[in-house]
Length: 372
Image (cartoon, rainbow, N blue to C red):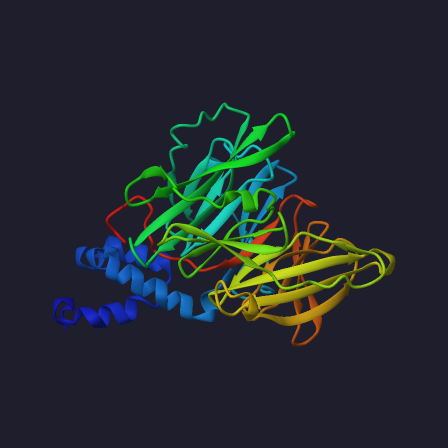
């Protein structure tokens, strides 16, 4: 049977199950398949299918390479214990990332990387597309009094059907010796341009230390500026909202609170609270989920665990709620269902801003503003 006689819906049903690498090869084999797999309809179908199949989940890790003195991006096999992670070659970004504390945001297979002062870039590891985003036009990259911090990246499916970068600008206040939030800006991938946000709540996150996470049209940051809270940005309404976190306990005689950690799992915001119990040489963790966005009363505790060791750092959650932990550059996975800790055989550079999150590859283009 000639391919021209096969219904397009059947091609879509077959192709949506293929990995990105295979689809890129199909595009070289047939003009019809190229046009089909580049259409926004197919790209969305492939993305949604990938997000519903657990076997397509990968663990993506950003860490600092001690040997080459660069930020390193690594991708684990589908089964975490099936082998060592693959280091992705990012020479084109490494030369512009000056230190280990570059930030990374993730949405629909696209990563947004920035280094606080001069670089913001979008990168699709599966298709190898890269787009350098122009620096905020009214801010000089040489101005050391300004820091572009707390950058978030997500998809506005409610109003504009557009991918957006949200950048919060902080300026050093020499009288108080600290950085103060002054403005927020949005970059539209479709329009390839920046604009300011009119109503800003950024003072609330002036002391935030966590990267943003994306869930269902919202960006979220953790803050303890006044009390533990989630600062959320609605990408459709382009407005901020503050939601208090639950009251966390102070277990043990001499608790030493560690940084809060946000994680996105099944479209919901999760927060990991951790405390070093110094006299016991243990680290205490609580994992909470916000079941209804913006509703303080919807916070639900998922589990509590106390693990042996000092300065165990929470780095994220895996697909079934397992806790991803880093200790002196090594990564571990704690499974609350079986109450066991698994060594992932990953060795990074100690305390160098290691981050981990669930990644699903996609065909979402970065350089075609008409493809969404």
